[in-house]
Image (tube, rainbow, N blue to C red):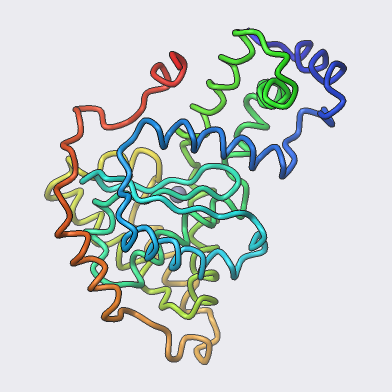
Length: 282
Ligand SMILES: [Zn+2]
């Protein structure tokens, strides 16, 4: 058990840490990068450059409109048929192949990316860590910065990584990320109606064939009220700002067709997630 004392100790040893046990932007990015390296070595990613470039360009066009445009945003496509998307602190965004397959129009994938970008913009997983495990975060980062780790500290850092990966966002977090998505997607010249459109599709699929979308609903509480709230926010925008926004275009459909033609993703095991236990064993 890593205590607050350990935090103070690490701070005393490592002048690098401005330890109030809050998380600075540098620490946030470093934590995200550590997590991303670990995740990328453990989950199947689509490496095809047509796919990765497309998602990166779309994601960047949205992230660039946000107050955190200066983060080193990175986008990854997970080679999984399940529907999911998640964000790591510091601007590392993941979207599953299964979600892209469901997003029939460009504005729907844009909405999903805009939502995950919104979680990073609002620092939701960082806030969770600060609330729950602030001491551990600082110790974990101190460990990396100073290499003064023992194995217990290293384990704590990895547990924090697990917590970030498995962030269960509150309804308030989801509402905030949706609001961010409405703004950032619109600012990128894309139609924000794609956000509620994708929600509708996923809620309908939960009724009829829930297997592939369980992970998404586990990490992103989604009910009809989010559709209503998002549509209300779109309706409150200046209508002139909604003119000429892109719903879809041929390049998006070409990208999806290309993705569809790639070898089928590996069939996920029953639990298609890295469990916190697996992370701890690293
Ligand atoms: Zn979310």
